[in-house]
Image 1 (cartoon, rainbow, N blue to C red):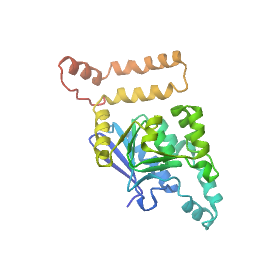
Image 2: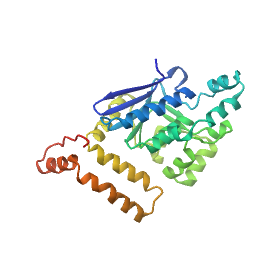
Image 3: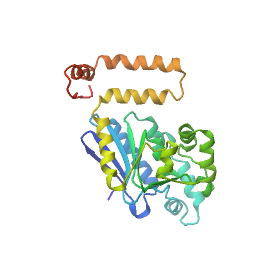
Image 4: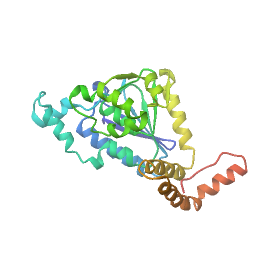
Length: 266
């Protein structure tokens, strides 16, 4: 079985980390495959929402440093070799960078624990839904490294510098409810309702005009580094082609006729 699976249904691409026997810890091969699947989904005109999740009881327990060290040095004890190999990966095609750059909206379905690199992957998604059993842990400081996968940029923007510093410096584990209170996850749902909750939210996004949703995401991400005036000007330039789209005409017509719109992404 592939360790990263891609399934398409009703305009939703579900990407699943599929190494449950090791709690979906990520090898170099999985990093390359995950980036490829994310780019494939983003390039697919039929895909309007991407759901990233994990198989089994964990979302992702971090990097598979044991596999990395065996590949790089032939020894379980040679973690330096594995870490160096990871550092040599092209950062522009690494999953956290790809997650940040794609226009398709992303939902992280936290079916279980997310630690280290797995937490950064979750934070890199636009929206997070957690099962009540999920736990979040940065853990980098406890392993003698730092969040090389976007955590130092993402976490302070989500919870503020002081709280991010506390979480990162201590490597503390958060329950799903604690993560919700901090604003790290959008929703926490019972385990038996988790799949339905993810599907419902993904469908709600996918039913909207995809060109508009992608433009909204681009402008929200751009606003993180732009002034207000720059972003307003940038938004105006994004608006002009949308006004000429068939989806805009359909959206207005459906509103006037009091019916659900049928968007085509054109």
